[in-house]
Length: 132
Image 1 (cartoon, rainbow, N blue to C red):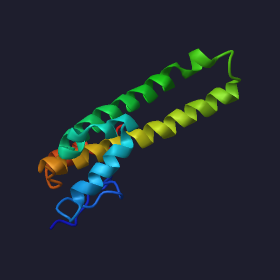
Image 2: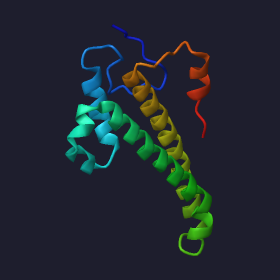
Image 3: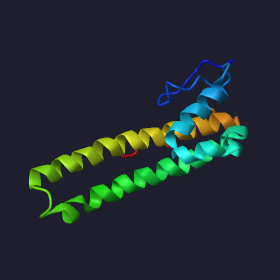
């Protein structure tokens, strides 16, 4: 049984190979996607499918935060005072950072579910170095 968890591993999810790894991963992933996803039994039957869907959902959130950051100043000028826009941009920066880390955690969990998580792989460091 593996007890190693890489940097960025979600604390809510047991390590790959540990008892209840898949259960804790499924619960965590379901919390990341829209609540309606809980209706679909296929996502509990095949948690790797849920991981894939969560990966796309979180990636879309990352892109939405980036787009919001890029357009906030022009879209909010005249609606929000300049200091308010600066605060909004700070929120986008913070949320963008959180979402990028979340996307990386989802990818780690998906790799573990697929049985392809190999932290010693040189590709690992490249893929899981935060890119904001």
